[in-house]
Image (cartoon, rainbow, N blue to C red; front, side, top):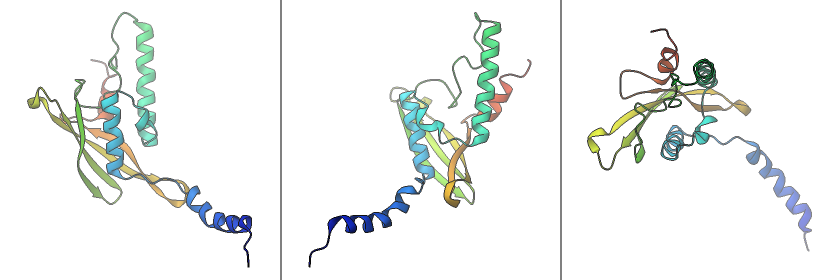
Length: 166
């Protein structure tokens, strides 16, 4: 007996559809890898979709304030003249690796180790602070909510304090 190929393909296809419709779940370590890729290439594209809505709004607000200041004084460098401070220092590190990942219920911390081949004494570690947020299909998704700098500050604090009066 010969089985018709089209009905078989349709039958198999029915069982593969739900898997294709489910969202890709990204781990905290994978977010760290995407973050390092963005730091090494200078392209924030890989991480913009991995931010919490709150951090996305904080960045948009800071960029809008920065643009207003730039328009008012075009010959002066605005508070975010070097861009969003994605790391403790603006110096380009030629190595970026994911360090320890710590999971705590709905939060995760991912160490991001920056290294300078020619100046190892300048190496530093920032920490990505991730949070689980509701996602599609009753899933929860890890998203970047803040960055704790190697200094005593963090991204959200800097985005606010950059625009406070001196």
